[in-house]
Length: 202
Image (cartoon, helix red, strand yellow):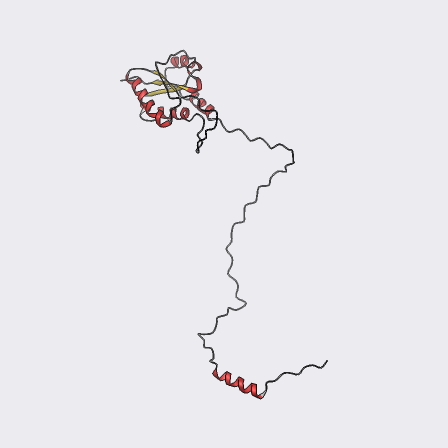
C-alpha cells in the first residue's frame, strides 16, 4: 500500500491564508492568558484530627441474653439516708423519743395531692402559724409519690413533693424557724411524712 505524500497548500489556499493573517491582531502582554506553570506545587491541605476509633462491640450470639444494666440510684432511699445522717440539732433525749415514735406532733398539715405551686404557700402559712402559737413539733405529710409513670409530656420523678419540702423548710423564710427535720416514724406516716422541730419563739 503506497504511502500518501505530505499535503501542501495550493497557491490559492496560500493566498487566502496570507489575507486572513493580515487581518489578525497579535496578543499583547495584558491580554495573554495566565497559565500557571506545571511544576507549581499545590497548596497543602489542612491537617485534621483523625476520627476517634470506634468502640468495638463484643460478639453476640443469637439466643444469648444481654447483660443486665445496673439499677439507677433510688432517690427515695437517698433522701431518707441524708435525713438520718444529718447532724442532730434538737435535744438528744427528745431525738431518741422521736425516733421511736414516742413524741406526738402538736399540729399537722397534709400536702398530699397538691401541686408544688399550691403546697409551698400552704406550708409557709402552717409553719408560721405553728411557731407563733408556741408549738415545737409539727408533722408535714407529703405522701411517698406515685408508683407509675404519668402521661405528662415532661416526666415528673416519683415523690417530687416529698423531695421538695425539706429544701423549703431549710430555705428562707422558713429556715429561720426550723431547727431540725426528720423522717416520721411508721405510726405517723413513715417515709411519706416529716417531723419538723421548730425553734423556740422569742
